[in-house]
Amino acid sequence: SSIFAAVEMAPRDPILGLNEAFNADTRATKVNLGVGVYFDDNGKIPLLAAVKAAEEARLKAAPPRGYQPIEGPAAYNNAVQNLLFGKDSALLANGQVVTVEALGGTGALKIGADYLKRLNPAAKVYISDPSWENHRALFESAGFVVDNYAYYDGATRGVNFDGMKASLKAMAPGSIVVLHACCHNPTGADLSDAQWAEVVELCQAGGLVPFLDMAYQGFAEGIDADAVAVRAFSASGLQFFASSSFSKNFSLYGERVGALSIVTANKDEAARVLSQVKRVIRTNYSNPPIHGGALVAAVLSSPELRAMWEEELAGMRDRIRAMRTGLVDAIKAAGVTQDFSFVVKQRGMFSYTGLSAAQVEQLKSDFGIYAVSTGRICLAALNTKNIGYVADAIAKVL
Ligand code: PMP
Image (cartoon, rainbow, N blue to C red):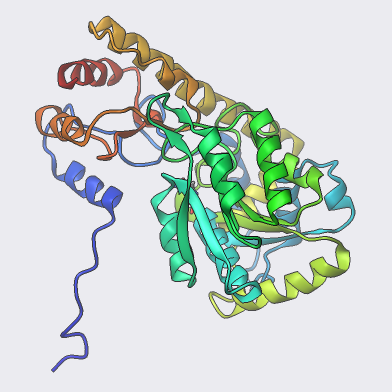
């Protein structure tokens, strides 16, 4: 018999399953609020003008396609470091930071998880409750036991900060804490600057290993403002990990562009850590693809293209904000008295709306509006054409 005869069907990815159902829906008014992708006001995934310009220049130059260094090109890694740590960072000047290109934010988390497993196999990993669903799977597949720390407060639709602090205090030294650097997915509830300072202190006091996941830099307040957590940990003297993704802020989802950065204690340590991380990469996919990283490096290193990108990024950020305000106003205008103003306080692409699984189901069956059963919606899928329809539908299912 076949060697695969006993293979069971793996559970479907809940969000990809939602996409399949959405694609099969024939209603012209259907709206997909499930997927975590930024769409423009016409419902299209934008190709940023800065990216297009970099791509055209590259096509014209027609460079050869040799192998890249295992860790990716220095121009790319330096650009990532400047974005994350700030170009005047003392850590960068000291050579304490290891940065390697990775296959998106997911690839960065995977390389980081595999390396951490070699560094401290007995450590336990903690992710927020709730978190991006792939966090648990990624760290479990690296061999870790994964648990939650308290994070979301359903009553305030904000952060349960006392609960979070209690969780951090209870962790064993050496525990790995995965933190959303900004634009928390799925809740949209972020820590304040002052709260980040407290989290840094608790990580320091508890001997914890922070792993900052930065998937949305520039989507909340701005490039530097959104790096507040990274900067606070940088100033603390702690060693920590940070994953970055250019999927959202460069709209380069399918190019798989990201990076893993590791802050070590000194330059000598950095060289040794880099050598080990390179082994993880070498035995996984050998070296990263060229194209996406080359575009990001070209944009970030050209003052003209960078200014263009910053403006386009601000445009995406402002549009999401306008959709947050617009949705709250439209729900109110539809006669709902329940307070939805929390949607404006939440940041990034997502909101935990508080809609129940039954209400989400009714949005789908009655209106062709698709959301995650937890009540998470993607604000970046709203536009001036569908926002009224969505608000009216929400008002009807409440
Ligand atoms: N972390 C978080 C919190 C995310 O929301 C995402 C994207 N959905 C990622 C990481 C992964 O990003 P990428 O698509 O670049 O792998």
